[in-house]
Length: 435
Image (tube, rainbow, N blue to C red; front, top):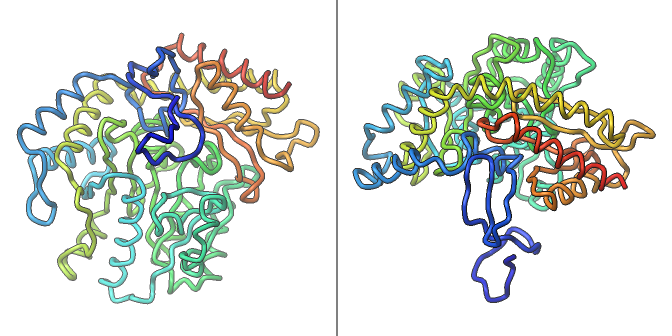
């Protein structure tokens, strides 16, 4: 364990950290030789599993050949190939790919691109971005302002222009998808539709409300409303995309929808290098390029050749091993097991999700509601950790404070036996936490 006063590392918290030294498949190993089943793929990143030699070799080849060029000066063969392959895989033909280093950067880029798009069209009064509560779009200030996740925003509230970020309520599973989506119209009218640039949402919610999914028809109606009001529809697929939900894009699980912008991350390079990005429709790209002729935004490592080479190697594996289909099959297996755990553990109020982006909603079995004081998710996660299972606990989905949940998202390569191992460890963790 490491949290020593002699260390030079700025840790994320005061807790002791084991030192990870190796990864293989769905497992991580620490310096003491202990094995952990990575039931959350880190933060739903390690989609293809750990220790893939061919990705490491692709990184090394690219680093020898061309380690870096600046995006304002050059393109590169690997970026051109990856963008074309990725757009084909996602079914976003004619879209343009903007590569960055992480999901926060990608969402910042989408927000700024939406703003510039409207300026280029002669509507500079459009600057507001409607988002949902709860939601999570990133840690940088713009992405954080867009997020409806109280605990992560509170300390930084003085830095955020709240008026620029109107909030829509969370998806309501008791409503039809169409009726649920119509609530966007109300928020638009209250905000002043002529001032709204974009609406951004996670097709399957991640860290803020584990694996909450709107009903069928929701995204199709959202797209219609956005078109009616001249607002860009942005799908944040940082966590849910790249096959994790059993489809290349989660937004197309139930509806035939193509957003104006699609934000991607995490599974693009699956943890082997920092890589994220956004896909922009021809209308958005052409409007900006035929206007001022440049996207007025950029990052030093945007389109970094070594990171993009990792993404290309990961995409090879995803396609060759049919990991999108595997996520669907193994997700059904894992969700069935989670629903069996729900029957045995009263503290589990709901098991839900799509593919291998799954969640447990935890709460008071006596009321069927969240506990008044959060903490059960952390207790379950701690008990799971002690059993060698890594999960992703969270709170605040109900009102920013209350609402415990556990997010699960193992590598898409997980086997049947490993699914059973995960469920057995989680079963024991829930029993301990309830006791």
